[in-house]
Amino acid sequence: MHIRLFVISLLATLSFAASAENHIISQAYEVAVSDLRLPGNLVGSVSFKECDSCLKQTVRVTTETQYLLNNRTVSLKELKIAVSSIADKQNNITTVIHHLQSDAIVAVHVFKKGI
Image 1 (cartoon, rainbow, N blue to C red):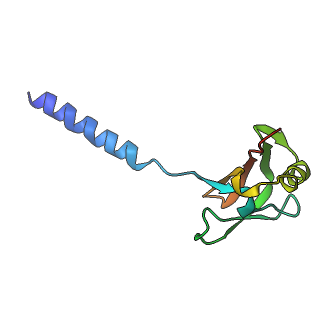
Image 2 (cartoon, rainbow, N blue to C red; image 1 turned 90 degrees about the horizontal axis):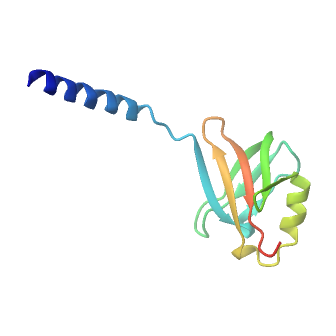
């Protein structure tokens, strides 16, 4: 009986320690294309707002930042051309993935309707 209680308490302690090590690595934001400003070049920053009443966030991009258009990797230039051609920027969604430890954007994914 004592061995069973010991094993149960040991497992509970180990699971608590393991769960304490979980950290949020990245934060994903879903924003309207109208609330997104892409960088001017490969080393710059992305600005975005999650909602109308939210504060604008500006986070740096690096040469490692990925740009995607409807699940297809594209260059920053291609993405900017595609974004500029979106008629209804309010209803097209973008996902911006922010790596918290490095404080950099790792991916910008635009979902353009109709292509």
